[in-house]
Image (cartoon, rainbow, N blue to C red; front, top):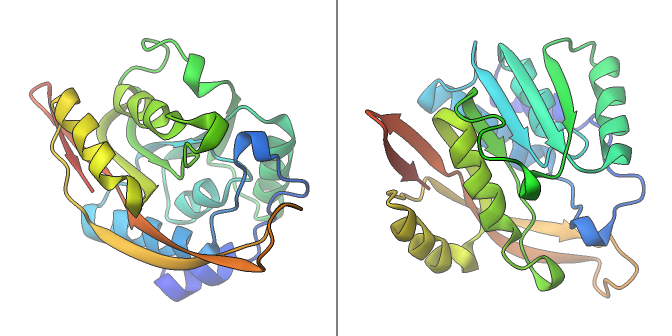
Length: 217
């Protein structure tokens, strides 16, 4: 599947009907999702035929895209049942069968629950702002325990220095793969502007070799 075709398909994925600010629910745009997934597959061959986990999957745009790129199975993890209901509806409308769902709180997940169960982990985690400070790091830490081969994640570029420090603490190596600029549309009543321009760093890649971890941005 070509990049433009993938993005066109993802534009039809339903998103949050009533997003919950406490969960930092912002939809991953079709363009970002398509670019991220296409890069993961075309450059690193980490989707097709792989067992993939999508952490904080929300309405499932990354999972649906991974399924379209012929993932062996993509399992979406999210705490919100309303979002997972939309995910199920999206999977049914696209007639996708190679996806599954798990409702859970990733921040309370026991490390051994899914340890090294997935080839690839993909995610657009909460930014970890305000009341959710540090949430992005908890998601990344959970991803590291779950992946056998690779982790790909999206983060605000402004947090790169902090995440670099955490990576050093964890003994992993990071490399920036790509950066994206995009407009985040107003999603909540308290948003005063129609949209806000964000800078986002694309993709954390985790390689596992001889029990050693290498992390790539």
